[in-house]
Image (tube, rainbow, N blue to C red; front, side, top):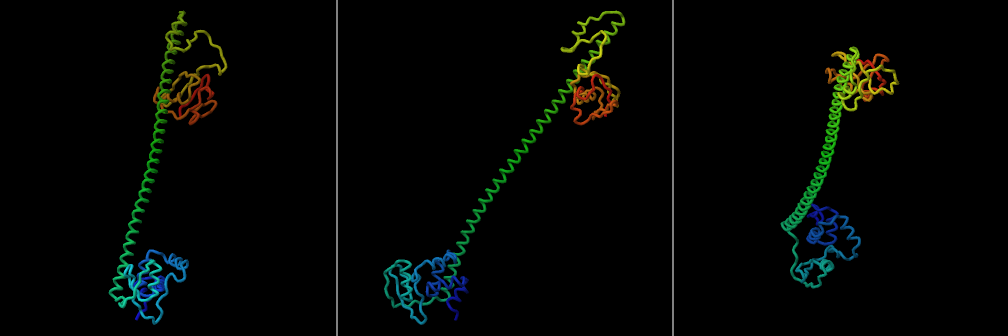
Length: 316
């Protein structure tokens, strides 16, 4: 016949835990009661309790050959086989009303053992189910926190991308407006140059015919701030004193001769050429002295590029 320890191990209890339970309960039934009562404690906690407790607190086990005695606790109605078990119960519960009983406590039948074990398993499963439910709820909370964090990060990323796009759009808008303004300045300059050439032609014609062309009339017909052309002889002067330069521009669509203010940039000259005859300009080639203007060079003024008072350029 299997011992109490073997029966507990067969029921699925840990061997060391079952040994402690038999030592504390003294019988299979009491050991099962003790296992049920301490099922939530770990083995380390049980050992710690045993180490710190008084030496006789757990109560002695039944001695080999000891006859089972029937004692009853009048406080709770629980029955015990021996005096030692009754004392152990009293120490644990502080119950003090005990009486002898002629009723012999029968050992647990296999059915009762199975029912007891099933009850223990049921409580264990209920505890595991409750813990699983708690773990699931905790995982859901953690997942929700993670999703919220990911959502916030995504929103921050989208906001940053939106701001960058807005900055890029604003920069493109400014660049487009700068091009429009440059084209307007070039067109105004072209119109002023045409008007100046017309007036110069009229003055030269008047001089050839011996007529006097009133300078005041020329001034009134020119745009505000434009100096009237001189009808007298010209004298050479330093390049730094020139306010405009005359360019001879050789393009695939023909040659352009035009005067520009010395502060006009090469980019503005390129826009003027494109507006005047539709030529695409990527740079300018000066034949003498040989020099190429492209890329960042297009930001230079005619004065900075050394193209004053006149220059011949080939469109690239």
